[in-house]
Amino acid sequence: MIYLDYQATTPLAPEVAAAMRLWTEEKFANPHSPSREGREAAAAIEVAREQVQQAIGLGGGSLAFTGSATEAINWAIKGTLEKSLPGRNRIVTVATEHAAVLDTCEWLGKRGVEVTCLPVGSDGLLSLDTLKAALNDRVALVAVMLVNNEIGVIQPVEEAARIAQAAGALMLCDAVQGLGRIEIPEGPDLVGVSAHKIYGPKGIGALWMRKGAEPAPLIHGGGQEQGLRSGTLSPALCTGFGVAAKLASTQFEQDREHVEALWNAIMPELDGWIVNGSTDLRYRGNLNIRRENIDAARLIGDLRDIAFSLGSACASGSGRPSHVLRAIGLSDREARSSIRLGFGRYTSKAELVGAIRRINEAAEAQERFAA
Ligand code: PLP
Image (cartoon, rainbow, N blue to C red):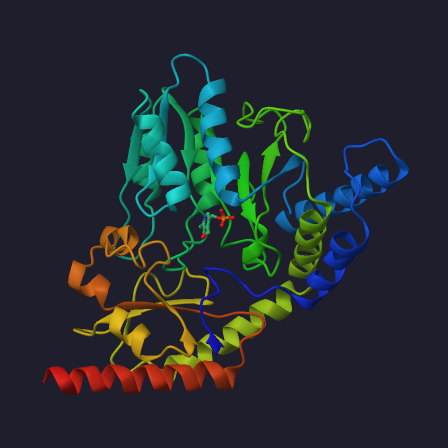
């Protein structure tokens, strides 16, 4: 199988699997217990916390582990609104955000919070003037993602944070697809990340919080994670996340150059395809492309040994065209003719080029059949 779905999830790095083994096969202490073994597990978690914070690269804040980035984002949004001053009851976000943001905002919208969802241009980018015009002194939170999971475009997060904070709002950045791929810019007050997008394990995410911007707790219980997020932490998952984050830091340049080389290798093979979203302001391990009149779902069905996806993993299977492709102005038909190829650390040039050639042949076969 050729795996080209790196936005959905990444393979577990062998270094991560090796580091987790100690905590799955040998040691089992509760990291919140005062026993020697418990303190050893707690110490391993603190090493991991430091490694994830270093990979995020923002100074002066703290980090709490969560069960996923979805949880981190739910917590950031709901907990910020809960803590905000009485007159600040508005959230401003963007039409192309992940469902973790949009659905949480919609849920709050049904409970009296005012939600403004800003449009993007045909390149998928948020205009800072549009953001500025949307802000007033009722906004508690602005949520703008770093790298879009469907089309890979990079939003102007640093500038957006400055604008949000000038209006007295906090800024949340969903950096799930950015961590380890591009630098996370200074500015956000809250940053959500996930281990399984950086070659770490599934089932663990984290929220980075600038001092003073900690949201009210979402999950109540034993008071773990500085009293902000209750629940026993898994030393295995935290260690896995930590080692994955350390690799993301130490291999950052190598990974970036590798993805750049893959992008350059695939470009000459794209005759007949149009890239969805900006080609410049984009993480290049995400190639979302469309081809007139092809049925992308059929293409995936025809090529079962190549793992790639429709425009969005979330839209896949639901029959609904992707909200992101719609937001950049594509018709339903164009969205249904779009595929996403995601590649990264373990993709070779030969398999990527081989895969796109086979995708091209299958697309041409569809075109011949339709003619
Ligand atoms: N945000 C973005 C941009 C994502 O791509 C994803 C995962 O698909 C998430 C949030 C949710 O992450 P998790 O799987 O850790 O809940």
